Each structure stands twice: as C-alpha cells, then as structure tokens.
Length: 157
Image 1: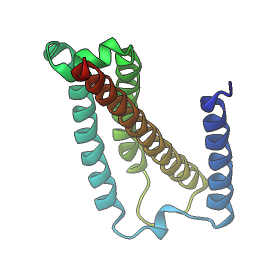
Image 2: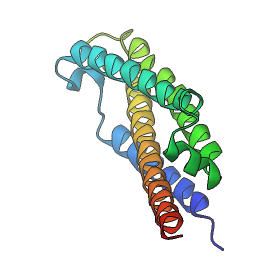
Image 3: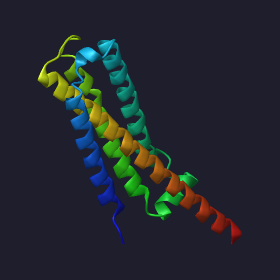
Image 4: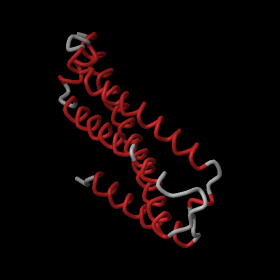
C-alpha cells in the first residue's frame, strides 16, 4: 500500500523550494507591500482567533463525551488522529500568530536581505499551515462519511 503522507510531504517540499526560488528571483521585499503594518496586525488578530477556535475544538471531545457524533468517532478509532491534528494545528497557529511581531521589527521601506528572508519564510509557513488545514478538512469529511455510513447501518438493524 502506498503511503499518502510520504507523497504529501514530498509535494510540500517541492512547493517550498519553488516558492523560495520565486521569492528570491523576483526580489519580493517588505517595501513592496502597501499598508504593511495593517496587514500584519490583521494577520496576527486572525491567527489569535484561529488558535482559540482550534483549542476549543481540541477540548470539545472531553466536554461532550455523550454526543453521538463523538461516540461514533471513538468507535471508529479516529478520535485520537483528530485530536492530534487539532493539537498540532492549534500550536502552529499560536506560533504563526507571533510571526507578524517578528516582521514588525523591519520598517515599511525595508529592502534588506534579512527582511526578505523572514518575509518569504513567514509566507511559506502560512501557506503550509493552510495546506494542513485543508488536510484536516478532508479528514473530517472522510470521518463524517464513515460516521454517517455506520449510523445508517445501525439504523437498518
């Protein structure tokens, strides 16, 4: 059986290399971004909100143990995978929430190499975070399909 995580990680590495090459070839710098500080504070607010939502979803398993959906997820043995993914995403979003603070060290008209490196790294990290969110959504969809099919089978009996 093929390992889909292996191919996903390889494709992520290729995307990182391509984006890094594009950033340095096109010399994208902080001075190219209009309203730089407004965008950074908006990103910081968004990721703080997202981290609180993800931590809430992580803890919902223990607050509602009698919920039918949570019981079905536990019966299918996918609750631990879901908890692991939610925990990893919540920690990642907390770390990403502090990236704009690091970028605010540089001025709006900065063209330095370090500013370009940190900006490119921050954009790549945010894009990789959203690919992980996409994977979580696909896993949730497959879990929901499994729960619905098991619920249909239990109702037929």
